[in-house]
Length: 592
Image (cartoon, rainbow, N blue to C red):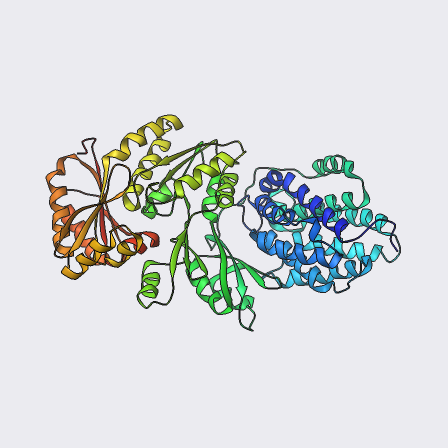
């Protein structure tokens, strides 16, 4: 018997209240985040997990077992970051352990303790003074107290012990001690316990008092933690399990650290820090189908949090091709577009390369499509930036070529935060789009106001041209960029098209040649005639780096210095085909 009304619906409401407390504390949790990396996103990551759980309809719940099952699945779906992944594994451990059909508080407390062990086992290097510690002390305290007290008193006592554990994390772990903060993940778990307890015991008004007590104990200081990580990317993969073997942490260790593996009934979510996202995807392929992949640049996150002095964040999509040096110089944020190879999700430029995907298409091993960024992904990007910037300037691929511009505009309309957001339709793509993004970066560096930058870019985009020499016609025929009848005729005769973009960003056929070499000569002649008005030139290639670098030599012989050649995005490779070469030119205001 229990002194409180307790069933599946009450449990779900209490878990949701705990989630609401975490969401309300998001900014504070971000501010004190130093472990395992000081990227200030723990609040965002835990909020993502809880927002997923908040979607569970109460009508679907008949018992505690039902609640735990739905919460576990939603936790896997929404988990992000180290603490979020551990929290998700904890929920899944509770669900796996709770086997009774009826509502049994004592069995639930046993399941909570069992889940702690699963949470520890899911982590490559479990450390005390983190979310794991407070999970352990709260779960055990609740189980022990229920042996002698009723539920209400046990919940209150366990919460007090959780608070003591939270405060102790400041001195328990060297990172927290050096930065004089409690662990952000542990504080997030305490916020959850606080809300969960209040909802179950019916004392919704206690939060303000407890939060006040916490704030007296917990100081938020300027963090001293330096970015000295061996791994740059925080990667998460959710995959649907296929086959009988289970992924082991040891299979990922040579590719990174901070490994957490959270397993649900049918889905597994993997978190790690790595320098090689593409290799990680290959390791995971035998274990199932990747349904969702996230790759965050921790180096950039640290820069945003600790070193950035600009008020405007510059963002573009992954179709824009830029040298790494320019991305670093202007701290350009890139929204990766998605490539779907059969059912498997890949992130453009992060988890797949041009050769891999074109080889698979040549062998007819898979059907490949692309998809737009969903609104949740764009909103998450804005949410991450709002703590460090006043405005966002998003330079999009041509709206005539992709729905990305409209997707970002719609997300900007739905966004309810503090950022001022400007979205520009570049009317360009690939290396040409990259030239416009580079200009935007320079204007931000100079300290220009957002509206002035937008005005300049709207003019400047008309001064950039791109010429693409296509060798493989099939992708352009399949995508509709060349009419099917005309494309087949070109193939039969052996003609090679020369493609550009018009002022609206639509693909246009500007010439044909008997070979790729003749098209390259045509492009070179066009540029040579206007040599004096050239401001900058960039080259891009889908697979043939050798030819592209010969072009670099040609332009340098013309006296045009600082010409770079780079591989294009895989989305560009899908439409331009193998051995395509592109030249983008920025003219000095005399485009004709």
